[in-house]
Length: 343
Image (tube, rainbow, N blue to C red; front, side, top):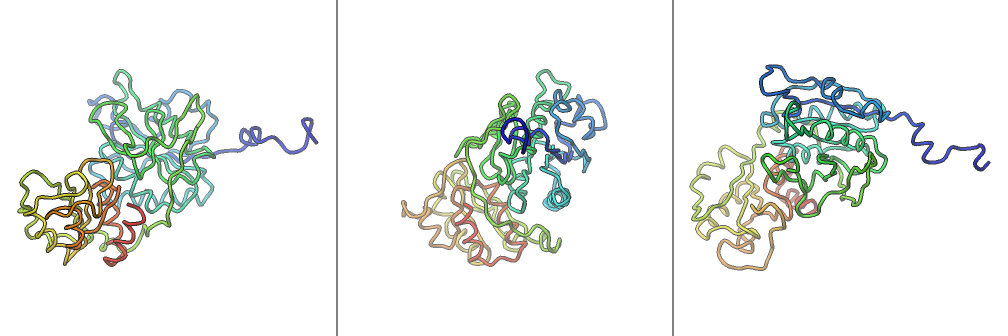
């Protein structure tokens, strides 16, 4: 019926639709008022301090989960948050926002991304400066995160990290500075999108894969301990002595394209005979190679000794993926296949 009646336009439909976002508060700098107050800000207090949030018209269901520094979070606690968020989406929530500390944000985001089964966006955010600090970034980050969680454009992106008006894929994001408000970046790809004048603009799409099991036996998750060894100059691997009795897997952060000292290679090969050992690069961006160099300790030599190619995954994310796979009971060949797909 044209402009005078009939179905509403797409823009009008978007305005009329009652969006709902679940906001879960975990703690971190964003919840520490000034370093003096003993108690942390609640999720409601965090939301109340965000200019423009009420005016956005996006309904919020705000809940407190646990007020802990992100460095104290566990795999099991993060998976509990996923279960809570999943129930909310099943009940009709359009998206989820989690506020947490930034110390482990890149790892928790990737863990969530690996198990998140929904089209609804799962957005993680935080702050580099405390709420009482000059130039506090928390309110702007929360507003942008809520907009992304409610945005049609972000559906299907999995778990994303939103800070500084940038949208980063959990798969690629890194914390690249200890104090700068612009600390988060995706060195290999750049951000997926931006929030501009309140509008979510997604510029890239990230590949999505079938989610990994998020539940299962807690004892298996506890037993699936994965060590991380960062290779250094003249490293002989003495720190790895006895690792086979304490851990179920190992991630190696090698030099450059995936190299280690020649003296370390046999020790890593011996470990690979008894547990999955994944080779990554300590550089923070780029992929390990597969067959360019041939010397002892090179990527070719290490793969011949049984190490698994970690591809583009950085050591921290490779550790997350390996632990989930081990907890699910994956065999070595299945683990290698999973890294070939996601690495």
